[in-house]
Length: 406
Image (cartoon, rainbow, N blue to C red; front, side):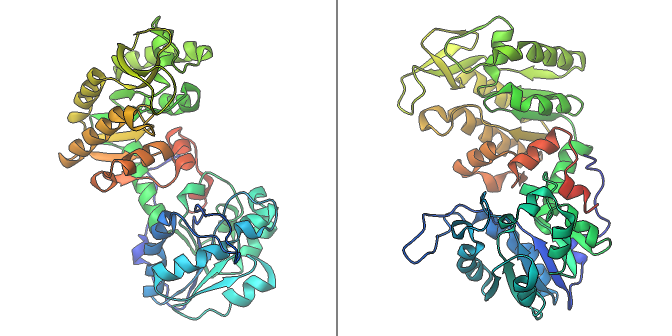
């Protein structure tokens, strides 16, 4: 992905007077069980709130808004996954009525979308009620395009998919297309970290498996000065170097790749920080007994659950003077409060570095959940909304939903 390329005009400079803006949003929100009256309550409206600035800008500049999104993984039309369930929350947050179209294409959609007046909002039914959406069907994309005059992609969480509504549809708007404010922010954040970042640059990479992050680690070797590795994936590196890791999570078949990565980092002069000590548990359980052991000498019967106190201190020192920080993946099983200290200390260290002038990007579902759980999301530079899309960006892949707009 070439993150040095951005649209020439900022979204807030666009005038939507008299324009129907067709906005691809990410309303794939969690819902409660179906109630007796056939409704499902939205249990977390974060993604809906994230779309509000883009929607409001269009409305405030004299346009109307047609929203489209997917919800869940339905196999055909299914009332359980109807976007109708989102309407009450959207109306409350916008402070205005939202018209709902019982389909996203065809007469039912066009009857609603083509009759909109300035200042009005419509929401189309779930895109994934049609198999053509995920298939990236061009005819289906053309049908969707009939619902608007101007296409806006504001769904970073789906930008890595070449679906009809995220990539193919842009062909029908050769000039009249743009990123929304959310997408614009994501692209700028990636540009800040992967483009020409201010040094020293550090990447803090955690998570369970080396195999899921290997492409990310390889891509970052040309961009960082320091690499901090934690989480379950660290034990593969430790075992590959001859350490004893007890019952810790490990991918023994990844030893060669782990050692090759360490050698490549050394050749490039990158400082790699692995856990010195580990907070272990005697079982994988929230109430497991705790003991700190050297990471390369964990006894049988114990498994690594978090980085230990020496590691937390060393990692914080590695972050302290950095000017650009990327965090992707927790340092341990932060979902268990007894084993959340390492992840929380990393979050604190990133906040302190940010306060001292560093640019910090938090990307990936678990690290986003961790920074939110710690209550520190508003004290870092940017928190990404797209787990899979962020991961593929860090791997150096071109995201179809971004390329379609540029």
